[in-house]
Image 1 (cartoon, rainbow, N blue to C red):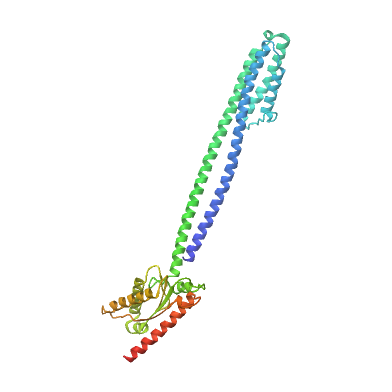
Image 2: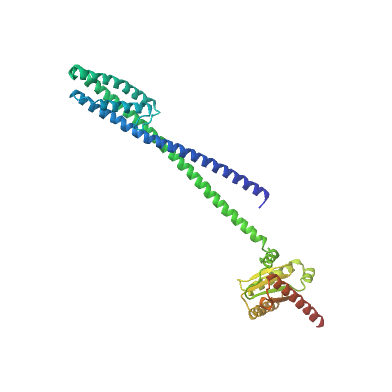
Length: 357
C-alpha cells in the first residue's frame, strides 16, 4: 500500500472517529432531553389529574354548602391543590407548567376561586337563595375546564417533543450503526489486505513456494523436535551454466519446473520452500525413513520423465537429508544443518562421478 493510500485511509479513519464522537455526543444530549421531557410529561399528567379533581371537588363543596353542610377541610384541600398547581409545591408533588396559556387560565381560575369562596361565606350567612353562588360556580366550572384543557394541550405538545426526540435518537443510532458496520467492513478489508501482504512477504513470487524468510522462520524454532521429522535439502546442478548458455529465462523456467515436480511428490501437509536461488527445503512430519526414500524415488522418476521429453533444459540436482530420530534433542536448525552437510557431500560425489565418466 502506497504512502498516499495510507494517508488517505488515515484521514478517513480520523473523520469517521470525529463523526462517531459527534453522533455519540448528540445521542447523549438527546437522551438527556428525552428523559427530561418524559419526566415533564409524567408531571403534566399529575397536573391534569389534580386540575380535574379541583373541578369535581368544587362541585361537591358547592352542593354541600347549598344543602347546609359546611366543609372547611374541603375548602382547605382545594386551596392546597390550587397553590400546588400555581407554585409547584405542597403535599401533592405537583409541577409548574411552562405554558403561557395554561398559566393565564390557572391565574384567572385562582382569582375567581376567591370570588366563589366569598359566595360560600354569604350562603352560610344568608342562605343560598340570596346569593349568586349557582351562577358564580357555573362560571368557575367553565374556567376549571379551560385550565384542564390548556394542561392537556401542553401535554400533547410535550408528547410531540418526545416523539421528535425519539425519532432524532433513532436516526442518530441508525447512523451510528451504519458507521460502525462500515468501520467493521473496512477493518475486515484492511485485515485481508494485510494478510495478503503478509503472505506475499513469505512467498517466493517466482515459484509460489514459501521463500527464504519463511524457511528461516521455521528453522528459528529452537525447541527440540518431538516425533519423527525429516529435513531434505535440494540443490540444482549447473544452474549458472544454464543461465550463461541458454539465458536466465530458461534458468527461471528450470527452477519453476523443479519446484512444481517437488511440490507434486511431497504430500500437501508437509512444508516445501525455496531457500535460495537454486536451493529447496522440504520438512516432513510424522514420517519414516521409508517414506522419505519413497518420496525421493518418486521425485527422481518425475525428473527422469521430464528430462526424456527432449527439452533444451534438463533437471539435475543434489540432495541431502537428515532424520530427527538419529540425533538427541534435535532441533529443526540442527536437522537443516545436517541435511545441508549431506547435500554438499552428495553434490561433491556427483561432480567426481561426472569427471570419471
